[in-house]
Image (tube, rainbow, N blue to C red; front, side):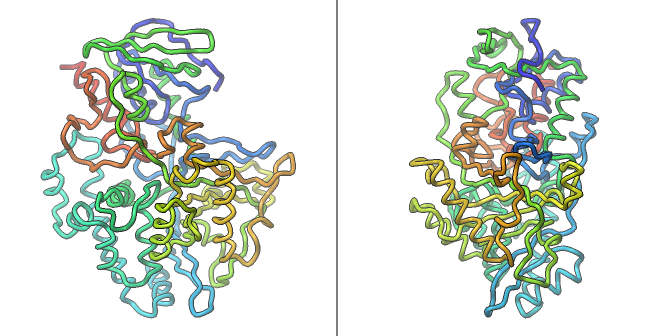
Length: 525
């Protein structure tokens, strides 16, 4: 998509959307399809935000989901409503977690059918108890997902309305009232199994299992309710396939997508608004009945001149790789093509996660950095050019936990390099050959590997503190000031449609949908 795509042309619109990430595009498509005039102002020379596909390695035909990379929270309703040419592919293997026990390389493979998973639990733990507990725990979260997920695209329920809908006091207590560490320790005894369960509470969230703020509970909740099942799927064609489809839907419905246009100020009296924007050629102003901000709460405050919320902090390392081949495993009972097809957990035992959090909280890099990996191309080889497929090349995406932005502030480049080295050393401990021996090289002979810290994400994408959710995730029910849809702000005609909205976070389109619904309700009285 070229720089300066789209010309605002007219000066007044029904809605101006600040930011062309996936939520802004969802809102634009809904509003334009409803016959409203829509302008999207995007600072970068392309739309998509963090949900894009790029070729990061020089001369290599591998189109990777560079930032966001899996889909769970996107409601099928949005795909249907907008007629999107987009689909996801399920993974037959849920996860593999390698471990050394009694001097023997082994691990836990979850997936491939119930009988196989039960056998894997028994082989690791020596009995049936942990698997039975696993079934009970995820049976509970599955029932909760069926009841909670449909509420995300409706007006916010109250806490009591959601509690009645959940209709399971034990589940409510475990996820909404007590630190999730209590439930994990009540249900499971094996350290490795406990760690696998806990990881979904820590994605992009710097917290301990027993953090009294319960931000880890909120993170777990959003990870287990997606799609009404909790399944995390692979976007066919890469994450950019979704945002390309959304941009096409918005554009074909009449929305103007203006890239290379950075919004710098919003003036509003609650009924009409003006958005001042900057381009390479100067400044312009667009008037609107409604302004939707597909950016962080901090950015919203900067645009409107309001007091900003407390700073956000990201806590992850994102690594993209291209391999000539998948590495062999020390655990020879598992095919690497299965182990890497799901989520490959590294240094994510329960005690390891606690130690890594404590070390990072004290200002040190974790001695054993926890992370998880998956191979997109095993499920969806279309992201690779034919030559790479023929050679047997594969992608690897690594997401590191407990890497808060504060650790990188003294020297981002040096700390990034140190953390990457330590993280890959943890992976190598479970491989029969060094990962470095499997890396492909680009056209300049450099290894095909790139790493992004929270500070990199803040610089590249404008994410405050590199927080992938824009702020700590919020409970999916109404609280003081949340408004009817969870997108409202102190200004009646300015809405927050980014990940920082209530029920935001992840690649969901939910805030974009909800902001569009709020606008249409207002316009129709």
